[in-house]
Image 1 (cartoon, rainbow, N blue to C red):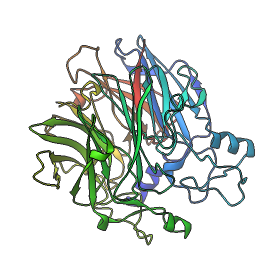
Image 2: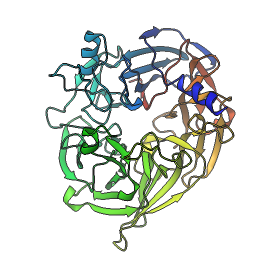
Image 3: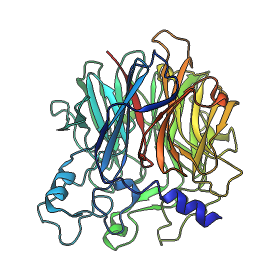
Image 4: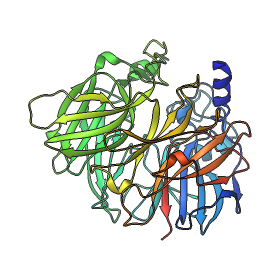
Amino acid sequence: MQHDAVTERRNNIAPIPFEADAPFLKIVGELPRELNGVLYRNGPNPQFESPGAHWFVGDGMLHAFHLENGRASYRNRWIRTPKWLTEHDAGRALFGGFGRKLPDAPKDLTDGGVANTNVIFHAGKLLALEEAHLPTEIEPGTLATRGYHNYQGRVAGSFTAHPKVDPVTGELVFFGYNAAGPLTPALSYGSIDASGRATRFERFEAPYASMVHDFIVTANHVLFPILPITGSMERAMSGRPPYAWEPDKGAYVGVMKRSGTAKDIVWFRGEACYVFHIMNAWEEDNRIVADVMQFEEAPLFPHPDGRPTDPDKSRARHCRWSFDLSGNTDRFQQTYLDDLTGEFPRIDDRRAGLKSRHGWYACANPKLPMFGALSGIVHVDGNGRRLGHYLLPAGDTISEPVFVERSKDAPEGDGWLLALVWRARENRSDLAVFNATDIEAGPAALVQLGHRVPDGFHGNWVGAA
């Protein structure tokens, strides 16, 4: 049974080999009339099969669902990065995993960027993101690729797929790892104001080279988690895993005031763990509180000698980190809030960096043998207590749930959740629309596609102007 579940799951990781436009999609139920805008979703969709390539490094493909006055349409396009264009012209793969060129690739080919992880809208620009390259600008309606966006030359190198927008100032805060080159311990940090102007960019050294997928921003602080999926050029050069799980390195989190500089960073220590995604964080009583999805051991990456990590420990659970800013300790606390396997946490983004009372994440069905398949949604309050729990029919899986507020001045949590659902038996996808505070009622509307959208990473809603 385990084998069947895994096989079924793999069927939705495989890429789709086409771009399409579907102007009128079938809708089951009724789309809320207030939902006017586009849900953009990004994810890996390799143009060509490449030997030994990690799922994380497939070419980016954008999927756009346009909702307007109760109607829905769909468009998907590959992001035409320099790598995609060169491989398209060659008619074959030229890169393996993590920027590694295949032996017969042209010597002058250097850019392995895939722009496959997230898609955000800030200062009037739609940007496709991954964590090793600059943002790629996308034309909103057509999904045409406009090329790298470097903020008038003020930003260079790697740029996180998880920048944070301050809901009060509109400022975009970002960082990058491998900032001094591949598999280096340097990080960059910067900010873009609400008009799209780069106002800050600096670099500093972390305790060791780590895959830093996400970071933490509150009203007055920025936190950089350095967790032991370590990067090693020596390993990479000798044919061993460039990224590997090394728990002996321990967990570090650097805390910096947003008004300060990298010289002021205070490093806190914690139990070895890994976190891909932050739900939210805020300040209270001279502490910083951060809710994260924490793994005891990293999934998807092996030990340095190639041994896999323990699957029972390689599952994420909702966990609260607490940092005492009084200077009494350099340890941070890690407290699990639930035992349910979950990932892709989201909030009402109007409360980003501020204390929030609502959160949602995709969860696994504990009754099914396949823990890796996310097959439901959990709604939690500000202390992690479950307010609602919805599970899909057996075999179906769900993507990141994206919150959309009912109106700009609606109370926190008043709105909808949009999530892509893969229907295993029919091998196609639905866009499910839930009432965000009543997910147990199931989807209020389903937008039905005739094909599947492969499992992907992140997306965001861009409301009609």
